[in-house]
Image (cartoon, rainbow, N blue to C red; front, side, top):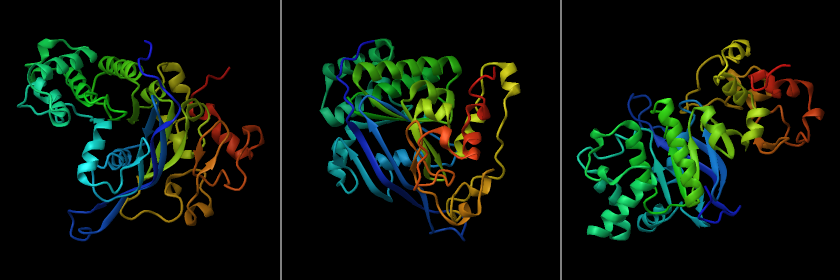
Length: 360
């Protein structure tokens, strides 16, 4: 499908030193304390591109997305959308800017009003932002349904009458109603069966090409990330520990946590899957309300050094593009090529360690 919108390499979204802090509730000893759910996160999204944001549950992926969209309080740092700073905007100005940045949530049923017809759910942003009414509104909603592969017979249906895949298509139609520049997809296909996942992913890629959309695709499914993303950022305990082009991340992962994630991804070949070496992480994700000193991954890392327990690593460039926050890669001496890296780093970064390449 040829693109109907010219795509340039200029960043449409720039996030710098993003922090999202929540006030804890519940148990008396923790009540009123602050928890830094997102800690100095940085990423850039180019127009018409896809950034995959991955990590295990509790790593801060969704909190980072909601912070970037200013859907939560306690946000610090900088979020620039098309050069306009969003942090610090008044509610009125922020409401106007939000039309350029939309979200598709994991559960389409809970994100749609079960008592509203599809025409009203999809048409709501058009009423609020573009003051469409009557026939013009119905025509625009019908056009949006056509873009996501649904006919006009769905206009008067309710969410409870639709399948999960159909409901997610409705959620996507509502997200693109205002022609946004960026769409955050927060586990948008994880609640769907495999065949429906493939249909929705093809739909998202088609809309990306025809409308020039840029996505931040949040998921724990690495096969989906590899298929749809141009770049990948790996999060752990509220921080990005590694980022870079998708090919480099999957073929030559640098951070021990990234290698562990990739080793857990299933390969569609039973014999090869059984022969792979699985990196099993010991322990649980640390408490975000009481993060460890030094590297947040030190307590679960097989390559841990004493330095890791007392000093937080800083992002440093790696061969093949991107950055990694790990003491295996000294900031003062970036690794120019895997052939010149220390032997321990070479062994750790080999694709064979995570089963991404067949042995001859």
